[in-house]
Amino acid sequence: MADICLVNGVFPPDEFGGAENYVHRVAVALQERGHDVLILTTTSERSRESLTPIKDSYKGVPVYRFYPLNHSHRSDSTGENVLAKALWHQLDTVNPHAKRVVSKFLEKHQPDVVHTNNFMGITASAGKAISESDARYVHTLHDYSLICPKSNLLRDRTAPEGELRVCEDPPTPCLLYAGVKRKMIGEPDIVIGPSQHVVDVHREHGFFTGIESACIPHGIEEVADEPGDESLGPSVLYAGKHLRAKGLETLFDAARNLPEVTFHLCGTGPFDDRSEEVASTLSNVEYHGFVSDERLRELRRSVSAAVVPSIWMENSPLVIYESFAEGLPVIGADVGGIPELVDETRGRLFSSGDADELVSQIREITGEETILLRQNTLSWAGKHSLQKHINSIENHYEV
Image (cartoon, rainbow, N blue to C red; front, side, top):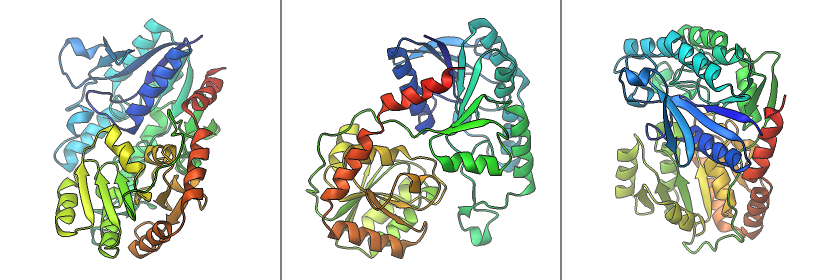
């Protein structure tokens, strides 16, 4: 058995998203296999004591938290203006205090493996500290935060007419930002991507040259015994954060042209007001806001398909795995790692931002016999268990 340290920039209760959920699930699974596991992360509580790691726990997993010196914590935003944000990112990328804390922590605990995830919030220079230690250094890519300060590789203010689009020609400040990150993260022994796409994009931007990489899809904890029954009639489900980058305007446009299909929207976020506004004007749109896991499961087993209409290049969305685990086909935008999960046997793809094409794909799925699609999604989910994922991770923990 090994001593394993999982590192992530933020962690509950300060923030809970895909990376944080992943880190906790992996930690629990590794503990169940007999490994000694701990998590190193940050805290939003600023005090003299919190400048060094304080032991805590989260749902049975030991967690060490410290405050990395900066003008704010990651969970409190990076500032109110461009200058404040730029300063925050500069300090976050090269943070001598945080690097020193990580270095001393590793020297004290002597883990066999350090598995890093998102550096933003704890400092990219933690990677250098890990490279300088004797531990095996494994890094998992969850987004594009090493390349882009916004983490999503999208342009809006600098794009024509404020249009939201994938950034294919980064401006000079972003190029400088990525250049410093490349130097600060050190050299992992292996880089893991839940999608091949996220690995390829990083290599295109000059990251991880000459370093081994592996594509390991996420794992699913529970898979339904049989698919649902579409009891809600022609209907689709959006579940996730309500953000402009998630392509909700494309979804709303599709809803206007499909009055015979009910659109169920679950989740919260900065786009909440817009979602509620659309739901109040379109009778076929139902905005549920935050829902329990049980309610979300009920919806997944009652609608015709899930929709993932993202504009940004999603890595490997957990919402797709979760939908497949309930036997629910997915209609997804053809960006990022989505096409690696969704194909004609498990759903449909459409051109990101193309509402007309989304309408066509929704009509096709809600109008045809979907039993085979549903069975295919369950079959796929059964082959991508969390235990299989942990097996692959463990193989790469070994020197």
